[in-house]
Image (cartoon, rainbow, N blue to C red; front, side):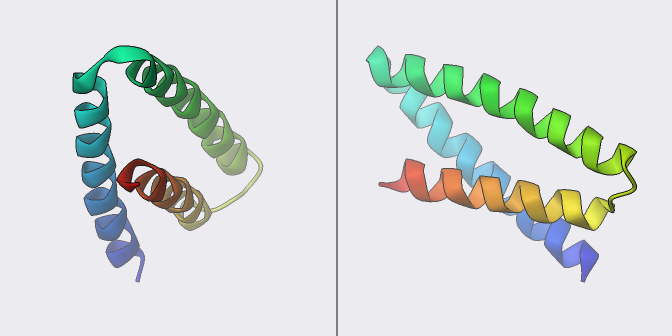
Length: 79
């Protein structure tokens, strides 16, 4: 089950990366906003994952939370 979750996460992350690259390639204000959002999200996700693990949370919990965020980004970028 954990391997499947990680595999799905990898596939979804690749999709989000591609969608983000397309948005960035178009340029303009939307690209600037997306770049800023991307950097902020990475920092927040790292901090949340580190806190979860440091307080005894599981890697599965971290993967579930990251998948949730990636899915939200995929929906947002696919519009």
